[in-house]
Length: 120
Image (tube, rainbow, N blue to C red):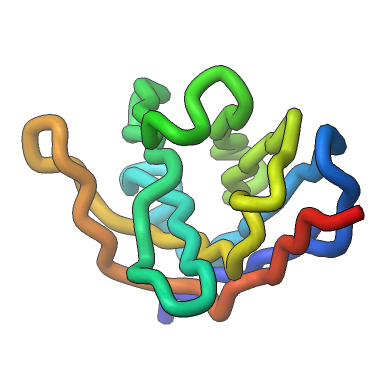
């Protein structure tokens, strides 16, 4: 059974940084693409960043240049480094395991989420 567990969320001031981690159980991590989504109150869940099996990445326009997704296949873990955080980045962040079809990422498994609050 595949399980995804996020960590690293919390309260941070505008301009600050956080690093989210997502540990994946099971043996399919190294052959799977991964994605980070977020959902703010009253809004739809949106893809923030994705990383393919071989390490290519894509980002939402709103986070380009500020967020970096990376993966460590030896640790079955995907990370989201978030810098220059803004109040509008406040959301529950979800880790997903899925696949790319062309340039589009499709999630298959989800974590339970971790809350990121950006506020002074």
